[in-house]
Image (cartoon, rainbow over all chains, first blue to last red; front, side, top):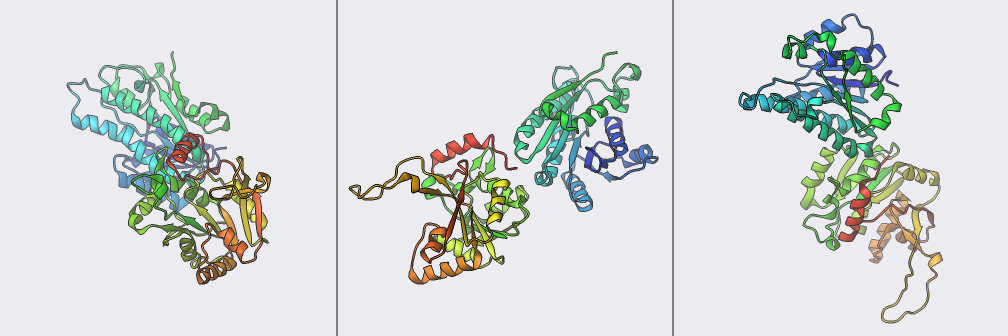
Length: 231
Length: 222
């Protein structure tokens, strides 16, 4: 089903984003890897064969998002799948959270998703498609020291649920993944003493994405899919 | 085939501050619903949207927001008939589809039925009338057989040249018709009835809007 589909993955340079992108390229999808740091992407996909496009995108910049979407439409004529994966977190207590930190967290995790979804849906509404938003279990429960991130992901979850209802008339299906602790570079920085082997690997998320791109997944559209691994 | 999309009304019977075509149903302007469907139908080439120039920016903003690209704004007239006539002069295809913004709930499979009737001069969807109607003023002059009456809907499809000629005759004769199939019938052309759809609600009054708000939540334009 995913072969030849045009897929945009944001935050594709590392972690869950690159894992999803590589998986989709291997399955024959046309993948647009959008990220600020495109050098890291090139290192990860240099050995891959298949159709892909690397696009330098700043998800905090509306013009950059518009440029991404315009480029994809100009080159491929359509967008079948959008995976909103770009994320930012810098955990701080309430008293240490600066306005800058708060604003950046919401700008990347929530406003960026809103703007990307809006621009992509302007085209996707004509053909139908799928949008997968990578939220977090942090958006579902309290976690001291993570208020900005948790608020942004809680917002993303509700935004996604609303989009599932609102975009249904265009045959755009919206999925929500809320991963728990995942062994990414970011996680390694946030929890340097944690053994990455003891937590969930990004491939598990990529596998869930693969399922969400199949027709069998329609029964979980618009619902929060928590993905956790307990070892 | 080109399409004329009637959206120049000011909604006198609607009692709202903005024309009814801009009123939001589930956050989306009424005029956008049917336009999105028409936009997706491949055999529709251009959509001439008759508009009220006082609100031109609202039309343009709505088209931009919803990425509606087939539309060409064309100035509406003082009456519905004049609006159709002004837009009709711009139509470049042999057939023309006429629809109105006040009927948001159409879908592409229904529109495709019209292409089966290329040999007809006028194709008009109708549904049965589920209540009794009568003529007359103070007293009832007779009985109308409900089974022979039709509730006429839009969209309608016409031979564009014949419709234009009929409009020109009507201008000469100062004949006012409430809609185009009546005009063609008056000038001797056959009007073909096809089965309409009950959901093709026309929003005219605030009560219609309440009904449409309930309905639009479950509406799919596929």
